[in-house]
Image (cartoon, rainbow over all chains, first blue to last red):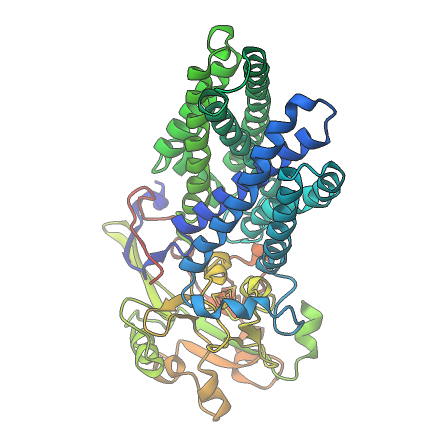
Length: 312
Length: 210
Ligand code: SF4
Ligand code: SF4
């Protein structure tokens, strides 16, 4: 007889979920910012002139999202007025081993460099925008990569404590960033290019449809990483198995399987690669909206789902 | 880690002898009153499970508290050094520095920290360091009616805890995570030590931090 099946917990102290939706939202916004920054830089550094409008869109979106992101952090803190404790940058006062400290340094440097970059891109100063593009790329990647470390170093949680986490976060940042760029670019093409010639608008259209293919590639990379993660969770420790259970057929199955995988990845993947739907703005924008919702669900399942396995 | 421990002149530790524990929750109550722990928050508590099928049944207890780890992940992850380690190994939270980011709570593998809803800072068991400094025992140890809790310096071979540790089989919670916890258990039950046993993981309710 399996004794384990007959255990009843009579008394225990409450289980807690310390990091909630606000933190998930913070990760989401930094992801959007990093993703759109990278796309913008690729467009600026590339030789083709027709990519330049994308560069501008990304350059505006990146600092914008990053101004909103830390607001979530501030309102999540129990002592928001003590935020300056983080910003003394003095050894002995802040802990350089903590991923939050990496974050504070990056959250100071990256918005500044992204704003300068946006200024040069919008004023058309190509030389300096290239310089700041090159400075900004490692910052943008690490500003989102470090959020992966925040989770990866939370070693009590099976879903978080994996070396895959920073990479997974960077790739999903690309996915959501591209999706947001596509949406804005479509709006621009449809409503703000009325004064342009037909050829110009058509060129812009092809460009946006090309971004759709990028989106598809990023989704495939994201799915591959998720697959690796889940496969290892299913065969690792008991907590890991319980986490996989929560995601695959337990409490978070709707968010993970339904919203994140099916509506947020599989359907958009089909829409951007199926020849009939890949050529219309209507389906491309639907795919992008689904992707953005899917990545939001991903941040939620990782942050809240990861903490939903009891620890005592 | 081990080196660090040998360097300490004093290294406090706690030993829970479950052969002597009756599950009366006196330690939880003593802690609540000594440290003014707010409602619905606990620095120490006794987890109680029931197992088996009649007539082969038993009730098992597991007093839980902060392990005051030698290599605490809460300390490593605290961005502002609000969490720090005393020379005698006790892990403390500086209430004037804590910004309430709750990262330590998310990192701790034992879920023993909480946010004080009135002071809006993170608190946890620190083995009543204020009492220890005054030469007293932690409140839970003082009150334990079965003398199941033993507190003392494991670097002193003549202390009671060193002698009991040396002559008994002891286990710790989640040693595989490398935090090097310093709460030792004698005769702890495997089912009580397993957080996922005896509950429906899809149905348990979680509490907001504050
Ligand atoms: S039990 Fe948790 S809170 Fe206590 S020292 Fe260890 S890691 Fe930190
Ligand atoms: S909540 Fe306080 S003690 Fe915990 S990591 Fe943040 S600042 Fe440090």
